[in-house]
Amino acid sequence: MTARLIDGNALARSIRDEITSRVQGLRASGVQPALAVILVGDDPASQVYVRHKVADCESVGMRSILERQPTSLSEAALLARIHALNTDPGVHGILVQLPLPAHIDAGKVIAALSPAKDVDGFHVQSAGALMLGQPGFRPCTPYGCMRMLQSVGVDPRGRHAVVVGRSNIVGKPMAMMLLQAHATVTVCHSATADLGAFTRTADILVAAVGRRNTITAAMVKPGAAVIDVGMNRDDAGKLCGDVDFAGVREVAGWITPVPGGVGPMTRAMLLANTLDAAQAAQARSAG
Image (cartoon, rainbow, N blue to C red; front, side, top):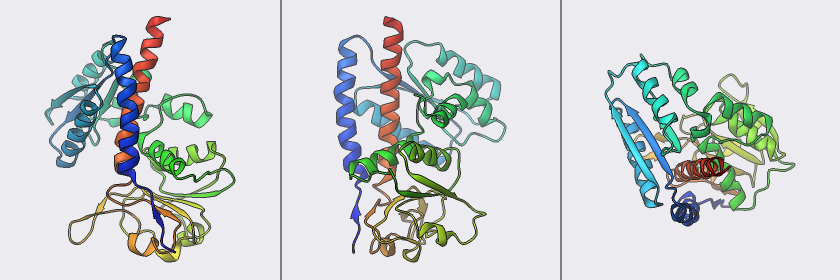
């Protein structure tokens, strides 16, 4: 068996095309969706991520507001800037690029965001809404993973899903979304004894630990759908995921590549959340 690829690039293009059409409709009614991105410091990876996000906005007709701040920016100054963006009716989504410098408390920064503009889905209100199954912004990476499964007809209902990783950004919200889709969910992590004993029972396996080759072919159930969230570098400096792609591809039914899998979908779902935020703001102003 050779697994079929879930092409994140192709799916993201399709989603961006749909978003472009919806943005045109909003602009025709006088509303241009706008995303403000704050980058503090000069972390090279963060600069790349932010550049992609700005380009994505422009590609679908959204306005992007990039604010570059020095590493020396104080926590108080950053919180004040967030407050100003929270109250700016021309800004619909706010994204503060992580990680932040050590002297700034990321928890305070996320808590300062207006939940109505929390397009990353990290605010405690967003997390609570997800936990309770209420409407709200979903974190972009797990949101993208769910759309990938949907795109190839993998229905989580009644399936056993194993999520490897328990971060607030991916692992925990991924588990909640799979539960909402009626999967039976197991969450594994660094303290899990005999990881393979769990992963071999998974119909849907999501790897999100940030360590290459965590998941090998011997750890995968034949025919499983494998979603690789990892973004690492191999010995040659090439991008790779948490999954031994070459080996696992011969066992799984579906698999996401790295690069070209989850990454493009994460960015696409950020656009989707920003568009939803703009439409919600328009509805509030009309009401």
